[in-house]
Image (cartoon, rainbow, N blue to C red; front, side, top):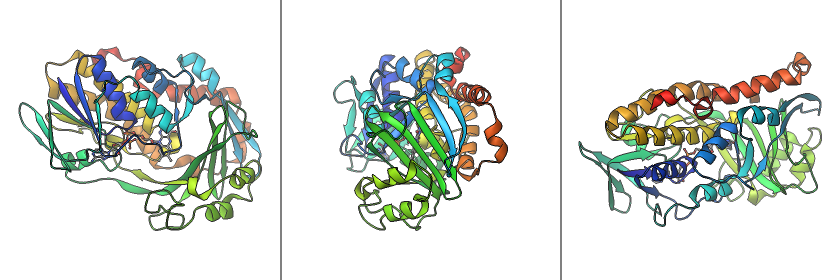
Length: 391
Ligand SMILES: Cc1cc2nc3c(=O)[nH]c(=O)nc-3n(C[C@H](O)[C@H](O)[C@H](O)COP(=O)(O)OP(=O)(O)OC[C@H]3O[C@@H](n4cnc5c(N)ncnc54)[C@H](O)[C@@H]3O)c2cc1C
C-alpha cells in the first residue's frame, strides 16, 4: 500500500517507521524546509519508550533516564517523591527525557533516503474510492492509497476533514529551554516539580550535561512575554526573561539560579491548546494521528507519548487488516479515542498548575504515590496494556 503521511513530527516519523517495517510504501510530506531543531526536550514515559524500541529506535544514549520526580512548594518544602525507576522496573522500560531534536533524529535514522520530503506543505486532499490525492502549496500533488494527518495542533488535514479548526487556547502557556546542567542543579536522574501561586516550574535533566527548565502560568493570546515573529519569545515582541524573573525570582533555590542562567534568545514560548477528542477522526481513506487528533496542554507530558501510541496501534492494524481499509481506520480511531480522550480532558483542566498543594499532601507516603503513578503510566499506554485482540 502507498501511504501519504503529512508532518514529520514525532508521530509522523514513528508511523513511517511502523509502516515501512510491515512492507508499505511511505512518503512523509513536511512543510518545514529541514528537520526541527527547536522544542526543548520531551519526556517519554515507559510506554512510549516501549513503542520506540518496538519500532526499532535505539534509546541507548538518548537523553537521560529519569529515576525520581520530586515535588516541592515554592518555599522549597519537600512534598513527595515518585520513584520512577520502580515504575520502570515493573513496566519493563525506563522513562527518559531527551532534546526533541535528538528524538526526531533517532526516529528519522535509518528511514530510506527520500522517505521524508521537506518544504512540502499540504493544503487540501481529494479522496476517491480507489485512492487519495494531496494538493500541496507549491501546486504539486501526491497520490496514495491512504492519507494520514500527523500535522500537529493546527492540522491542515483535520481542517480538510472536519471543515474547521476546533483548537482553542487553554488559558496557560509554557516558557522553556535547555541549559547546561553543570554545576548540578538537580541530580543526574532526578527531576524537580515546583508549585506555587505564581505558577509552576519544572526542572529535568535531558542529557548528561543538559537541563530542561520550564515555567508555566496563566496566559491569554496577546498577553505579556508572548511569541515573536519566529515563535521564539526573545526574537521579537515582548521579552520573556524580565517577566519570568519578576514572577519567579523570589522562589526558593534552585529557581533563582536557573533564572540567572537563562538567555533571552534561547527562551521558547508555547501557548497551550485544547479541543474535544472526537470518536471518528477521518474519512474513507484518511485519518489523523497525534496532536492533529488530540491536541492537549503539556501538563501531563503525554502529547508525544500518545502520538507514539497512535503510530504503533495504526501500523499494527494496517499490517494485520489490510483487507478492509476503512474499517481498520475506524477501529484504530475507536481504540485510540477511548484511551486518549480522558487524558486530554485531564490535561485541559491544567490541574497540576492550578493545584496549590494542601498541607496533607506531604503526609501521603511515597510508595503510595509511586504505585499510583505506575498505574497511571500503565493505564495511559495501549502498548503496555498489549491488547492483542485489536488485530
Ligand atoms: C511546552 C511543551 C512541552 C511538551 N512536553 C511534552 C513531554 O514532555 N512529553 C510529551 O509526551 N509531550 C509533550 N508535549 C507535547 C508534544 O510536543 C506534542 O504532543 C507532540 O509534538 C505531537 O507530535 P505530532 O507529531 O502529533 O505533532 P508535531 O510535533 O506538532 O509535528 C507536526 C509536524 O507537521 C508539520 N506540519 C504542520 N502543518 C503541515 C502542513 N500543512 N503540511 C506539511 N507539514 C505540516 C509541522 O511542521 C511538524 O513538523 C509538549 C508540548 C509543549 C508545547
